[in-house]
Amino acid sequence: MTLEVDARLAARGLDVALQVGDGETVALLGPNGAGKSTTLGVVAGTLRPDDGVVRLGGRTLAHVEGGRARTWVAPHDRHVALLAQEPLLFPHLSVADNVAFGPRSQGARRRDAAARAAEWLARVGAADLAGRRPTALSGGQAQRVAVARALAARPRLLLLDEPMAALDVDVAPALRQTLRHVLAEQTAVITTHDVLDALLLADRVAVVDAGRVVEQGPTAQVLARPRSAFAASLAGLNLLTGVWTGDGVRTDAGDVVHGHGDPEVAEGAPAVATFRPAAVAVFLAPVPGSPRNLLHGRVRTVEPHGDLLRVRGDHVAADVTPQAAAELGLAPGVDVWFSVKAAEVDVYPA
Image 1 (cartoon, rainbow, N blue to C red):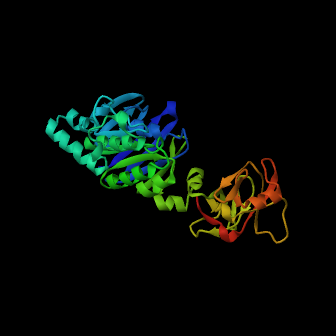
Image 2: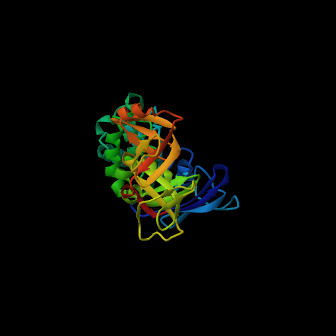
Image 3: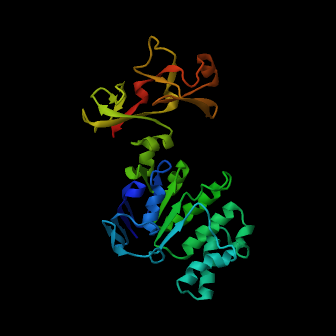
């Protein structure tokens, strides 16, 4: 069941084009306010675009031109299930009746709806919760029931908007494993800030920034060779953009960063340079014999990062030991030089 989206919504700054293959899970990544949830709203029909088309399995769900809907399928008739951060279970119904609600609203007989509810509760590991009311559930249990309720309606497309965001850290892994199992058979789009969600749940990722898809591809590929600042931050990499000079990447700030150049990078073409914060050294002044790449900057933040401290400058971050940070007196506002060996830098097309 393929999904095609090409829509614009000026009030939300959205201009997005996205495709999801049959049985594929795509993760939408991006900072807060980037347009991820707005995209889901347009697909689900809770938001109407100014212009654009939404198709699911060849069926046009929305076709809007100049604010006028040529085709508009109501949300309840789209065969699309939207699962938000909060489970939003009906408090007056038992867990079993919550899950049976979808099939019942589609006309299924009570017995058939109950059987489908029991099946999905078992599949998400919540069969023992069938007789409880939502108020008696933990956050993780309620979200499992919400997943079962969404899938019991047999949607052609499942939309998940930050499904782990409201859960405790120790609860999220169990739900993530549940979703990994059920999404294997489902066309789905999931929004998330968590790199684990992308790695474990998604076949592909699309990075959204300022309402547009700025980067997309197989999950491992995007995280290994990010082209956007957000994807690089998820992958734990420094990323500098600029133009390939044939000998390095000349950044907008005028620095030249040398590294392993991809043969596909043409001289004068946009390029990115990425490298690990652990590969970056910090000095208070250039020293003889420093690596080829020296980048001047000012410390913005110093924060714990495992057993090390992550020192963030204007454009570069470095991981240093607490001892080194103390000896150098690293603190916000201090001028420093960041150095990284060219052998540690990967350069590829932007």
